[in-house]
Length: 155
Image (cartoon, rainbow, N blue to C red):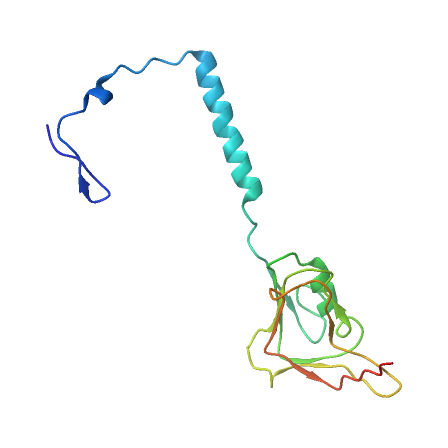
C-alpha cells in the first residue's frame, strides 16, 4: 500500500485498528441533522463576515458619487473610503462634517495635499471647522487634504 503524506509528515502505510472499525450508515434523520447543522454554520459565517468596503468619490464641482463630502460620509459604513478629487471644496456639506460614529477614511485621490483643499471660508463672523469627531476612534482617517481658512470662536 502506498504511503500518504499530510502536512509534510509521512503517515503509516497500514491502517491502525481504530480506523478499521465499520462506520455506521446514516439514515435520513441523521443526514437531515448534519445538513441543518452545516446550513446553520454557513448562515452564521455569512452574517459574521464583514461586507467589502466601498469607495465613494466626491469632486469639487459636485459630481462624483455624492455631491458633498458630508453626503458621502452619511452614505458610508464602517471601513468605507471617501476619495476627494483634486481641487478646492467649499460651501455647505464640505465643512462642519460630522461622522456620526462611522469609522471611515476621507482622503484625496491623488494623495497630494497641495492639490486637494477644503476651504472653510471661516472668519470672525463665520465660525467654521472642517470636521467634528465624537466616538469614531482611530479607525477614522483624514489623509492627503489641506484644510484652509478654518475659524473657531470658543467660549
